[in-house]
Image (cartoon, rainbow, N blue to C red; front, top):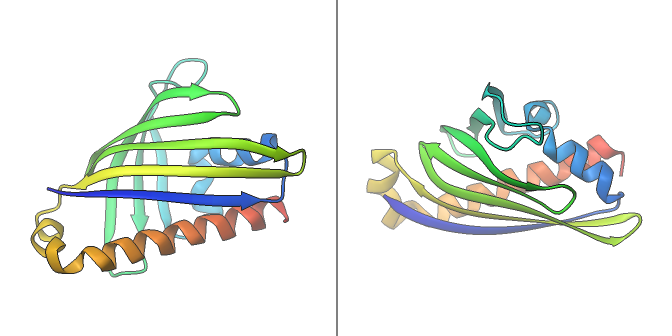
Length: 152
């Protein structure tokens, strides 16, 4: 397995509650986030969403797809969403939300994962910069889609 750590920061000119509502609704991501092919809840969580599991399929800028499950392990409303990933990626992600002012929200996403696909692990010594670039492209698509979804 090959380890990757990514930090993405989005600055969104919208109120925190609106940004939160769109990001928290992961089943709707395919409608606004280019690269998200599928996000389907396979197991419901508690009343706050903790324990819910989603099967997610991502199509990247490079010619491959990744499919993995994502389980919400912690939610602090309007502050953070933490999930663990397992399947073709294994690790965890943390969304953090900060209200800079009433009309500006800072979102940070920390993603620490290992690839489990044999071909990715074999190619990792050479392909790592491409995988990193690819992740950044997908996250940029997310930022653009979120801004468009929010009308900002």
